[in-house]
Image (cartoon, rainbow, N blue to C red; front, side, top):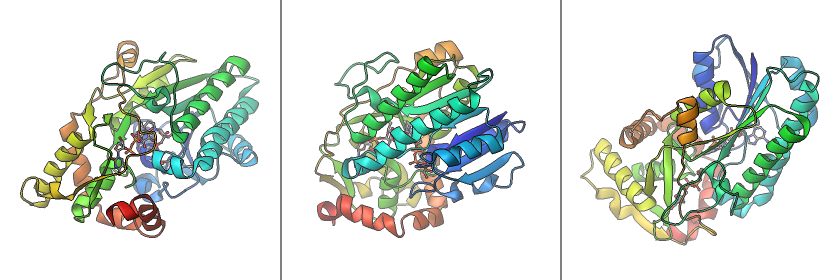
Length: 351
Ligand code: NAD
Ligand code: DAU
C-alpha cells in the first residue's frame, strides 16, 4: 500500500509517520509537507533514511502538484493532517486557515476522486480533525460523534468546513472516507506556541506564564503517541463514511494543569517545589475562548477496541524530559519569526 501522509513534518504528523514507518515496513509512506513555520524536518530525522519513506515538499493547495504526486507514487490512501492548527494565529490571520484547511482539503479530495474514480476498491481518504468543531461545553456534558457542529473560532470553523467537504465527497462521489475528531494533544515536538510546550519553555527560562482569563477553561488532554495509535486503528478498521471521536478522558482546568506542570518541571530542574508559580501572569482572555472541551470516545473503544495507554502525569513527565533533553530543537524553533509572533501575541501583556 502507498500512503500519502500530509503534514508529516508537524507535531502529530511526525508521530504518525514514525508509527507507520516502524510498524508497517511493507507500506510505502510518502510524507507531503509545505514546511511552514510549524513543519520541521528535525521532527522526523530519525526515520529519513528508512527504505519505505519518501519526503516531498509541497502545498496541498497546488492541484497540479497533487495530481503529479498521486500519479508518480500511485497513492492508494491518504492520511490528511496538514493544516494551520493554532487558534490564536487564526484570530489574527484567519485567511491562511481558510486557504489551507478548506481549499487545501478540497483540493486533495478532488485529486483523490479524479485518480480513484475508476476503481475505489481498497482506497481510503482519512481526514484528521478536531473536537473544536463541536463548539464549547458548559460544566457538564460530552461531545459525541453526532453532536451538532458549532465552531466558534476561525480555526475551528475552517476545520468544520473541511469535515463537511470530506463528507460531501463521500456522499456525492462515493469517495471512501473516514474521519476522526480528537481532543488536545501533548508530547514531544509540539511547537511552543501551544500551552504545554510554551509553558515548559518559559518555566525553563524563568519567563512569565501567560494564563488567559481566569485559567478556568477546561481541555481534555491526550498523549500524541496515543493519537497516532488511534489513527492506526481507525485507518485499518474504521467503517467507510464513519466518524470516530478520540480522547483521553482526561479533563483539566488550565490553572490546575499549569500548577502540575510547574511542580513536575521544577522538580526536574532541581528547583524548590512550586517556586515557578510566581511566574504565573493572568493576561487578557483569548477572543471567543471556548470554555470546555470533553470527548466521549466510547464508539472507538466499543467498536474498534482502542483505549489510551498513558496516564497523564507519566505522559507529562516524558514530555518535560523531552524538552529538557532537546534544548537545541527548542532554541532552533524559537529563533527568527517566533520572536515576532511572541511579541505580537504577548508583548505588552507580559513584556
Ligand atoms: P502542526 O501545526 O504542528 O503541523 C501542521 C503541519 O502541516 C506542518 O508540518 C505544516 O508545515 C504543514 N502544512 C501547513 N500548511 C500546509 C500546506 N498548505 N501544504 C502542506 N503542508 C502544510 O499541527 P498539529 O498540531 O500536528 O495538527 C495536525 C492535524 O491534527 C491538524 O489537522 C489539526 O487540525 C489536527 N488536530 C490537532 C490537535 C492538537 O492538539 N494539536 C488535536 C486534534 C486535531
Ligand atoms: O482540542 C483540539 C485542539 O487543541 C486542536 O484542534 C488545536 O489544533 C490545538 O491547538 C488545541 O487548541 P487549544 O486552543 O485548546 O490549545 P492551546 O494549547 O492553544 O490552548 C490550550 C488552553 O490554554 C486554552 O484554553 C487556551 C489556554 N492558553 C493557551 C496559550 C497558548 C493560555 O491560557 N495561555 C496561552 O498562552
